[in-house]
Image (cartoon, rainbow over all chains, first blue to last red; front, top):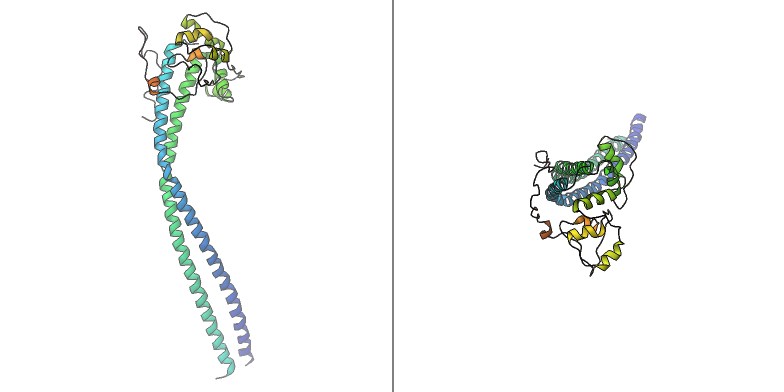
Length: 84
Length: 220
């Protein structure tokens, strides 16, 4: 009979510990959700910001044209000026 | 049934219920997290897709700019000789030493300053004019209207690396082929008419001795 009462006490302690531990796990899981949603929003905004990256191709073309013009200008200077 | 056994059964039931409730709630939160991470993954995948060509484009831009820089530095070295590093240093402070390193030379870089007398002498000799003492720039600008290209060269007779602006209502800057006369590196925007290639003078060599990077242009 004494063993049964000891078992009751152990079960009560186990129940309390279980509640505390599971509450901690649930709280941690609930704290992750808003963080993930915030990251989702930032990723979407970052993806939208990168829509302008395609303009780099236009920049590349302009730079190529500028350097080509520069090369022609340098060639003219090479003809016009004497060497050192 | 004895009371203690009933209590034990009740406690076991409570433990099982507690486990079930908390684990179900945790599973629901994990499902929400999973959905959120799916959205994050989509956003990150879009970012990766959009930034994928950036490296290649930037590398190509860098190669193009380096080719242009090497071309101009080679031209400066060819035309200005030992003064090239000083000219580079005067135009871009701090770059003279790097220029020397790039061409494999060492030494102290002395900036040429705003005026380059040797270049002015060369241009004056090409134009067939006598070098004249430089009048004050403001007086020159205020006194006369825009000179013709040749006259501009003979009036000032100096090359200046100074960036010069032209006052509104004053004389207009010399256009086209007389950059040496005014003596300034003008940052004014050019018109399309100015950008049109001028017809070569009679007997002038066309294409001979031109520096060309054709064939080594990375963008082609």
